[in-house]
Image 1 (spheres, rainbow, N blue to C red):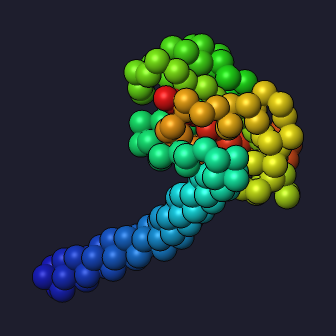
Image 2 (cartoon, rainbow, N blue to C red; image 1 turned 180 degrees about the vertical axis):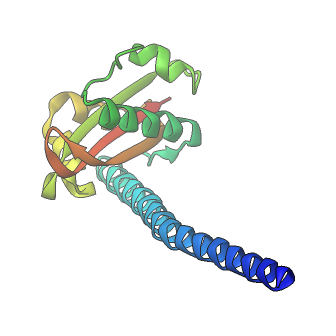
Amino acid sequence: MRIELESVLRTGLRTIRLGFLTSLALLLVPAIGEAANTASRQAGSEQRVLDLLNQIRIDHNLPPFAASDQLREAARAHSTDMLEHGYFGHDGPKETWAVRIARYLKSPQTSENIAWGSGSYGTPRGIVTQWMRSPGHRAVILTASLHRVGLGLAFGTYQGYSGAVIATADFAA
């Protein structure tokens, strides 16, 4: 009887462990899939913004921007920080823009554009349109001596708007 009871207990524990692991996997797989979808959306949107910026540069007889991994890292970190901490500005709560960008890249000339929006304002075209309608942002995009860009888009809820997008474009010579 003791052997049978131990066998039943071992089988029961195996079943419980298997059930727990199955439940855990079912919870994690959608989260992993959602993270992959967000990363894909982020990369695709950033590429679309780059394409739009480069078309504008070409239309103005300027060379297209080269994508920079270092500037993309800086831009993504800043957009995410703004979204997570609920602010909108070039300087963060803990450091200035100049200090932040210097951690990623050394360049004699740098600049930055930021934007946020939801709905059509949060699309790549909406973001670029906002920048081109602003004289200061437009001037940065059309600065001939800036050759590299990194784009970072963060998606989430901002100032009560779900589906908001915060965009950062960091530029360098």
